[in-house]
View (cartoon, rainbow, N blue to C red):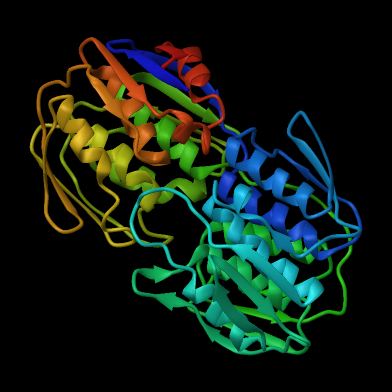
Length: 419
């Protein structure tokens, strides 16, 4: 096991190249199960979650080749059962249910594990499969879906805290090979859903409306192989924007889509930071003063829940009172207690953090509870006095490709050592 040591007080300056999107690559890798023909994916990030997904595909019988960000998957002959010993390591592995059901008419997958950020049920996924004509059973920790024929249906996918991204992905992948027309109402609008739909359409699917609340899918008899480049990771990009806000003189993000970052850029502008942008780059510059914020994490195109921990790290040293509410995962504030160990003044109240800015944070041993919390603690350490020791960094390796190296290239001083 490893830990990260962040030596605070260094100024960040320079360019950072953003990797392909984890949350896009995982369902797209799962979608390769829908055809017997080879699929080639470019800009696949080197992450532990990606490794787990490729392992799952291999256990299902796929031929998998990987080199320098390019992955080739051939699912010519596959099985339909994914074992617990692999699935338990990554919640997103549930997205293989849809393509297995669509292609083979059955799938058995262990109930997934994942981050400790509150209740993340898959009932909406299963409701969508049932609407398509599948029988669903849950027994001994396994989910089994079975259907002789899938048929189009109108499916409402909004849950208690908004639309489900993985649920939209899963139902969309099952529906592309169903007979007739499927309409997903209250679909997730995230760019990662659009990226999956674009890949499926390259494979021969007929999907319209991705990126809106209403997706229409005309079922086809079969899909074929395709090549596709994964979109840039907007959460990694947002994390580096916040790093630039916390400790940067001038930080430029390259190989990005600025439109995907508007929900992060706007509050940073309100906080006083300046931006320069082009077709595929974004530069953050310090403003004259830093202002507190009132933030609400919402489904896309709102401010992303995957960025609220990082923003809490920024607001911890922003003069005044900031209020951060998470409407997607109200219990996703385990980083607050760790930031308080560093001197932050944060009070929690039912899914809302009230942050009273302090002049500075102090380095301390802290514990990462999940992927985005671990990133927030690293960011907090950039400007903290002394050394911040972040434990359980395996969380950060799930979703950030060499974040310590990239920050060091910008001027940070970060060590990765044995715990």
